[in-house]
Image (tube, rainbow, N blue to C red; front, top):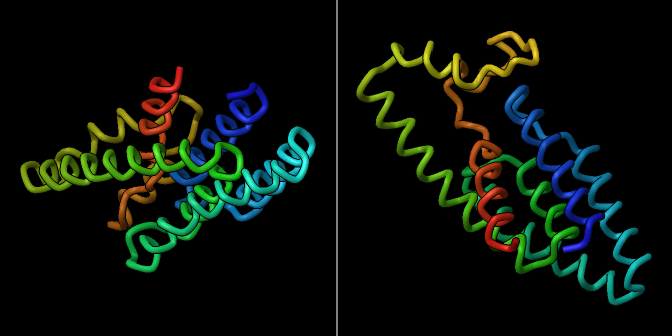
Length: 170
């Protein structure tokens, strides 16, 4: 993969990871700007064939996760994120990312369930120590999702999935 798409995908994933963990939202301005950027890049580098590549990638990333969103499995921001990722990466790569993200989400969900059943609230201090970054965010900001009792942010599964896919293609 070329430098520009790789860099754009990395920036999008890092930004989405931070915002999803901090506020449980992947903002529309983020996904939309990267989506538009992908189309501009593909048109500039490949002309009208680039439009097709970006459009197919968008649909491949968007439609399966839209079905998961309708089933209340993930948030709308995750759906739009994968549409933008598909526009940059193309259909095959976004499908690989989706596969591993869903696999890791299942593993994380199993671990969270097992830990909560085995230890209950006693494990919260350990999770806080592991997940609270050195950036100075306070615990309530960083772990708002954990304290709310809501589902964990999908980006916790997308991040290792991206590393896995990156390792496979390189």
